[in-house]
Image 1 (cartoon, rainbow, N blue to C red):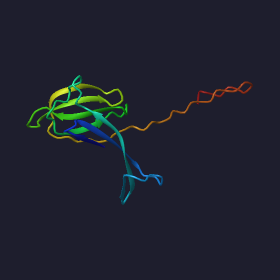
Image 2 (cartoon, rainbow, N blue to C red):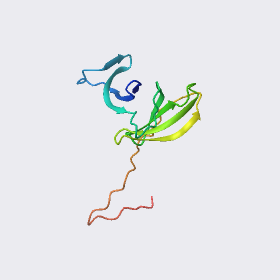
Image 3 (tube, rainbow, N blue to C red):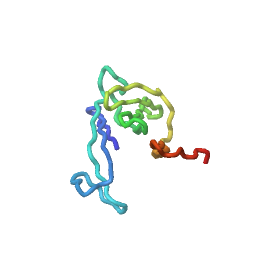
Length: 139
């Protein structure tokens, strides 16, 4: 979960997990269970050397997290005053490196679906120990 605060040009990132009994703050209770919200990190996006997010941007339209690298996120930023054209920025929150991935893209509707393939362990056959017969591998 993210929140962009335009006066300070800071993106706050919050971690949302299932609540445990030891969690005391930021608990959201609901029918299906409880969630715990914790502040993860704040990233200053107004560094003049990086200057990919210009002054005057009031909000970030969406943020997509990289499923393969938890340190990388992609904010979607209005590049025109009408809000029709968007810039996609790649932001590494650990190294604080930012770069423009796409400029002035026309995105009229934004649908995000979390899709992560689970890691499926591949069974590895056990090597025969000394003095044991070799297994029949043809089956």
